Amino acid sequence: MAERDQGQAGERLSDEETGVTWVHVGREAAHGHPKGKPGGPMWLVIGYFALLALGWAYGLMAGQVPLGMGLAGVLVPALLAAGLYLRIPYAMPVTVVVAALTILYHLASIRYLNAVGMGNVVVLILIIFYLLEGDRPNLIYRHRYRSYPPSGGGTGKTDTAAGPVTGEQAKGPDDGSV
Image 1 (cartoon, rainbow, N blue to C red):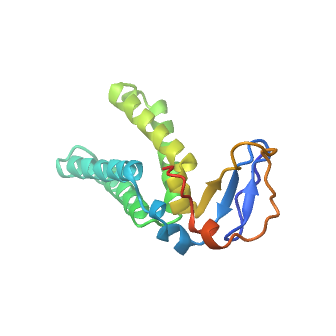
Image 2 (cartoon, rainbow, N blue to C red):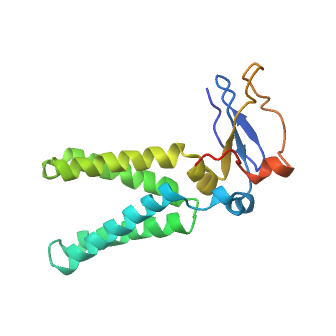
């Protein structure tokens, strides 16, 4: 099983079954790398929450939703979009929690058991999966990247006591993954 991904910059934590290693880097190294900036899927996630905030703002101004619910509906997605855009580390876990709570609310409420509500649930599940497993979100918000074992040969296991990573390894992924 994979060890918990807490540690210092440059620390290697591996999954003994696959040999994949999480390499932690500093914030500056992560954000300085080309993959440390939002890409296409991240822009879609940010845009989703920005449009959600605009939709709630329209509903609030049109008098379709109560004031308290409308303000929360505008502020929460707007703050999530801003946090993801500004690459604030806590924006990712907060986004995952808010999306999970929204999914539970949609599934528990009879009002959202329609095509639009279920479509929203599917989109939120995809967002959660991408934020937790995507290489780019992990580099941007968790300051870590996956290091794969060399292909061909070897045991598939990596040395977890390799020590700090320096030089080219600390710069981030360069395998073209998102």
